[in-house]
Image (cartoon, rainbow, N blue to C red):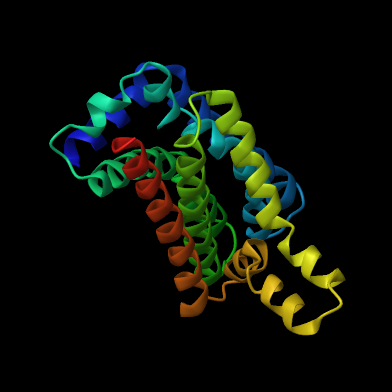
Length: 234
């Protein structure tokens, strides 16, 4: 797994993808910080994190689109699948490589709180709630994108498919509000990623929300392993 992790991280920064993703995250979060906090005279950083939800919805798939599809396109996937590494180790290694780049990209965001703290008193609990939320959110988007990437050899299809699925899980809350059957509506709304993420941005850290995000990651990583197992024996 460590060999896969090192190889994939290296691949991100020998090509423009890693640099572009990090730059986009820093520039957009910096712009949101300026518009919603500095220029508005606000000490609340929650809007920055809430807006980043939508930015990451679009740009994380660019980070994950090549993880599996590129090797399938180059017909190198069978060589990788027969390598002396478990499929779960392979999948987790690829997941962690994208997650490491993601963490680099968002590492600047806690600095915004430090900047504000020089001028006013801020709620560090709320800030770290926001940070925890965006870390969990990134894990969900990456695991989902990794799964979609395992289904196709076309990077563009992998990116578009991941964005589409990200939008679908975002719309669960709205979908639940129009379902007439109360039990079904509540079940759908409980699957809303945005609602649970929004609670983090308010500084509310509930174990159930953390377990929800971790469960989604585990499900998509498991599904990715199953896809690779099927391909190995095809």
